[in-house]
Image (cartoon, rainbow, N blue to C red; front, side, top):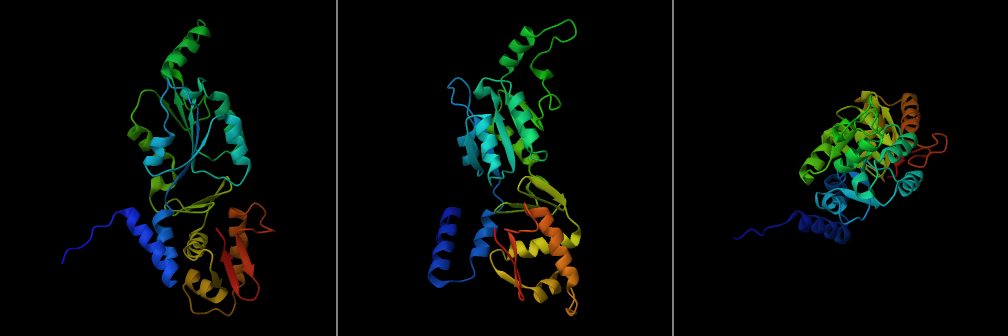
Amino acid sequence: MQIPKFTAKKCLNYLRLEYNSQNRCLPQLYSSITMNKATLLVIEGKHADHPAFAAALRNKGYEVELVSSGNQALARLEGSFDPDAIVVNAASLRTSGKRICQSLREKTQNLPILLILDPDREKNDAKANATTKANVNAKATTTTNTNANIVLSLPFTIQKLVNRIRHLLPGDGKNYIHAGLIRLDMENRTVRCLGKQTRLTPRLMRLLKILLDHRGELVERRALFSQVWETEYTEDMRTLDVHISWLRRAIEADSGNPKLLKTVRGVGYRLDV
């Protein structure tokens, strides 16, 4: 018997069809395959004399939101869009990118930024601003004076860019769950949501992990308490309510008016992401 060959895309389509036709519990499996795909906000111009990277990054498996200016990037960050990292292709914008990075850093303190520079422009800027104490070349541009986490100067390969981006991602892409607006880094016990990053206790991380595994589903309080605290005693679960409150502070814009982690009164909790 000849075993048919399946590509990854065909497998995902098959899972979708199985779930739609038989209503099996496959959406969690499908989500677990796709939820680790990182989301990038790429600021890039369209000048033909400089390389563009947005399309190549999409081909590498990243979710790419492309904008053509710093103002457009800030507008996207004002909404619910919460990328894993920002790529500023200053070379394609024919600018140093420093003001863009400064504006982005003022908007979000924890979001990693990668800046791409044109070394020829840097040399020209250095000559124009040269003094007896400051006569620099392209290599003098550092992460310190640009507000970027990583600075790359052209030329370089797309693989080098991908490798640098991986270093910016939570947990370097390992033990990392990305579902909706929530990024849980289990290796470093941190969660990032809505532009803020919070370090979690081991119990809070376990609580969030279970809710993420059952996102969109109602999880009963007793079952949740039993799994997180690894006990069959569920008579007093007030500590669960306290931990839910702490978790909301980490992932909600307003913990007093939760939009993601909701209480189903008298039954349990549901994480909508």
